[in-house]
Image 1 (cartoon, rainbow, N blue to C red):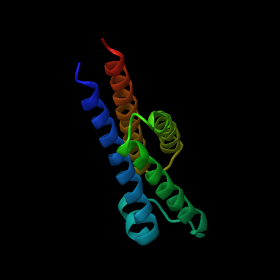
Image 2 (cartoon, rainbow, N blue to C red):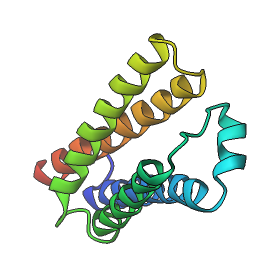
Image 3 (cartoon, one colour):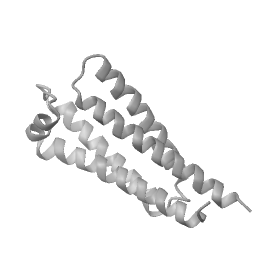
Length: 133
């Protein structure tokens, strides 16, 4: 097993990557909504207020992910919530795609599943390495 410090470092990197991913989506929603919707082949809602509110929440989430990106041991709870939240996002987005949403939802579901597994696995192995004799 790798040293705990290495695993905590990779946990921090996964959270930084998750923060960048969410911040990029927020920026796309706020700054380039037409381009982003065209790329994803998702139509924009007629009233952009709630759509932009999603961007605000994504920015808040990205900022929260920066806490364990800096100190993963201290903010283990955030990593755990991130893994669970990403898995919930995967379930919802996959369900939406299956219910007829554009194919982009399946790709987004896959990204959320990847982050869920990455955050959860890295957190679990870092904890295990830290308690190993």
